[in-house]
Length: 536
Ligand code: G16
Image (cartoon, rainbow, N blue to C red; front, top):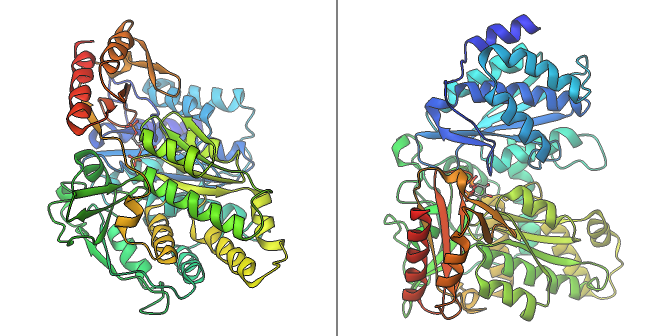
């Protein structure tokens, strides 16, 4: 096998003088630099599967919200969760090995991690619509073949669909079976759960869905075939930005990241006043809602809003079902969460909030500490996870009244509707639509639950983002020395001011976030902190 790995690796040489890093969501960079990385991640996938006794590992080739010329790769663990932390470091080691050292390092990982080479290795993979995808798939399959792994190509999928399939594959035929192991199984599961959760209720008016010209477009069109129609618990969906043929359109002037950072609707949106709109990102694992208020203009309903909506709805259902004393419900956010949303969850909903660093892996992990863990990044990446105890309670609790029975049925439906493996824009959209229908809310009522502090997110290009090191869930810089003191001095000058800077783990930039009492002050603070970062 060593000779096979060496021969295959030689077809995918590492660019000299490049240092690669498993970032917030895997390796991500210009697609032209990624060939050797993908090959080596393929080797890691085989090792990881063998280490876990032949359980199936997922591989997703995507650069999500990044521009079309980028691509990336990330690994999915057997239950559909992000790759275990320590393995990110092994992936980074192998990605940076010199070409001539790849086989030695592969074997040394096998030895250090006590991996039995005779255990079967199983991998499934998929990609988004980027033109660089098929070539990178070749690098991946060269590695899997050389490492003697069995593999299945699911071709084009959204990232959350690949997470779903990974879990389904590993739980097939067990009491924990997560669903049918097919793309169709995903649509059927969501479609049936949505019909059950809606209980014949209907959403008011249509929702316009901007698919970022990414893989979410064709997948949403497919999902529509499985959703209830018309007055029978139906939802009217208008799809826009679903052009996957012209690569340059991906995430261009559209998509969740555009809407969140620019704080405006995509120019292509024709939605009228008070009409619900939402935007997915390039691989459909994030979603942001918004609408135009005739009195106040563009209104953003971001990940914080989805988290608060979901937490309040599920909290109410748990109370109605007589389960609130048994179940610990909590919300997980990052430093990007608007201060007003944190206050609303703690003070109005009376629920605990945990803050973690950026990256779904951190939020997901923290959310599993609750029976119902609602986690969302402000950028729209999130989901809800239910503990075994919660799932059992929803299914075994004897209802004492028709109202209790109805609350329990809705909770059961939600556990199937929500993709519990990872944030999933399509599943989250159906969750939001369900909640709005149950509450008979327009986006305006949703928006009125609390008032966001004006905020601004700035992307600052710097010479070397790696010099920026943080602590306290990324809220404070420890390096470069003295920079945090300058940020603190600026923040102190603004009413309700808060600001932080951190290196992005997906783009070559530092992100600066600022909020303050007024729009102009938030902009001013963000700009001043950006200058400090640039000078550092
Ligand atoms: C990825 C991660 C998210 C993270 C985002 C931005 O999203 O999955 O958890 O919030 O990157 O991360 P950073 O600020 O480190 O660049 P996506 O949708 O791009 O995969």
